[in-house]
Length: 221
Image 1 (cartoon, one colour):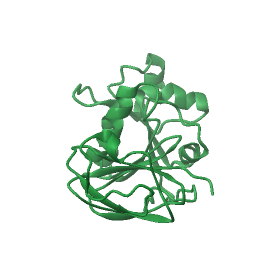
Image 2 (cartoon, helix red, strand yellow):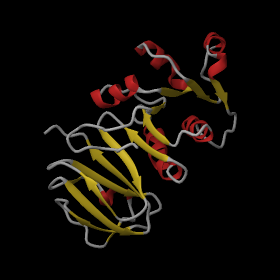
Image 3 (spheres, rainbow, N blue to C red):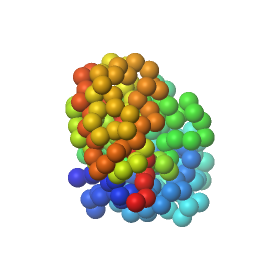
Image 4 (tube, rainbow, N blue to C red):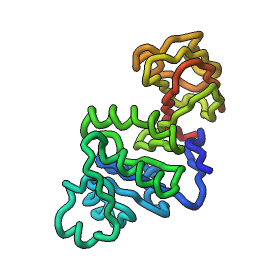
């Protein structure tokens, strides 16, 4: 079982971590870097392979249309390639598809933000689709994105930064335990649930509509 975030700036995961490495900014924060090092399997989007190798790690699977992969790397990792030339999906989705098809239903995505804002927004929004099929969290150098489909109480720490998004703009949210309360707030624009702050060790989101994508920052206490 993967616990997506611990308010004491720790992540508790099982011993079978499946990490998907996307082709955004390579992780630098100690939490995503530690997850990458501990991963039982790294499913690497083809554009991120060179970064992973330069860091000193090897891909377990390389997924994508493989147009970013050199002939040398295709030869070296010929038995680790998953090619999908469908132009209607991006490489991150192809990596998630491989994992789900191969029975891996608890996934951590790293390297999915930074470099290009359009890719960042697209990748974050895709979490709502991925979580219909598996438990997928996105870990950045600043915190964790996760998806919730029903009213939930989430762990936090005092002062921890919280942002909440409704992808389809349908959610109406009431919160408890946040510095700026939401009382039946309609999240009909992405900015409306952002830049909040936890007051204590947990907060509750009661909502209709949704799903919600919740961001919790890493916090040292």
